[in-house]
Image 1 (cartoon, helix red, strand yellow):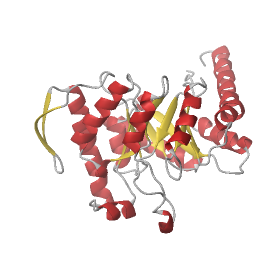
Image 2: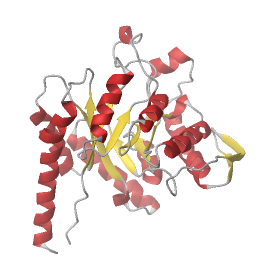
Image 3: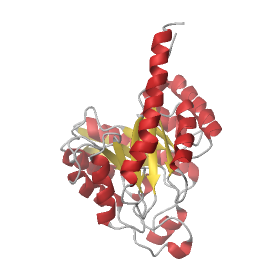
Amino acid sequence: MVVRRPRLRFGIKTAQQFVSYEEVLRVWQEADAQPAFEHAWLFDHFIPLGPEEQSQGPMLEGWTLLTALATQTQRLRLGLMVAGNTYRHPALLAKMGATLDLISRGRLDFGLGAAWFEREHRAYGLPFYSTGERIRRLGEACEVIKRLWTEPRVTFEGNYYRLYEAPCEPKPLQRPHPPFVIGGSGERLTLRVVARYASIWNYNGSDVDEFRRKQAVLDAHCAAIGRNPQEIERSIQLPLEQGRPLEALRSALQTFVEAGATHLILNLRAPYAPDIVARLAEEVVLPLQAAAEAARQKEQQAGPQ
């Protein structure tokens, strides 16, 4: 039996550190006008990543910026890759996500992760729990948010979160709810949460063999709860590094496509070249889409084995 290849879906990510709103907006609007790209992402941090001496640099807040970009674009699916669960109560995240899904006319992909940046938590007085507790909180948060988006009122008694007759109105535009995009690769806890809740799983790494191995672990967790693992799209993000030929980026992406990734994010670094979106479409996205289509046609011609 021939397994049909899913269609490749490409997006951009513009981590909003050391960059202006106008610069991010320009790139997003160019991507919105370029059919080769289907989705776009920000990240969820309050201080720049990198050496501690850079922590005083400019950083735009993710949810606020994402809402502004939703009103300035028409087509792209959009989200945070990924929101840190420990930064906000999940009931608040549910309200924010529902509102943004309505503002964007049903284009929100709801990214969520356990959060990891200890220095950021320390700077803002946010509790930084153990790895295990952060992931267990992530699992409870997914349940809380899903129920708030799909039930009239929610009463929930978890180990970390409690709600009593909590409403979330209006509901998101998407039904039954916006897709959960969960980032993380922990095998014992995180991938169990992915198996239960995610429509898209994002692997934030560069080792394709490790990506294959993590997929096998995820598939096993899906089997344990009776879920079809093909319901979870496999996502990766690779950086567009200054001075690196686009051919090298295309080649790296191809290895992940061959390993099963179909949701592909090109992580841009500021400053953004004036023609970067057009070049990425022409030199990276369209050749990979053409190769994938050729492989799909070849499989169709071969027929059932």
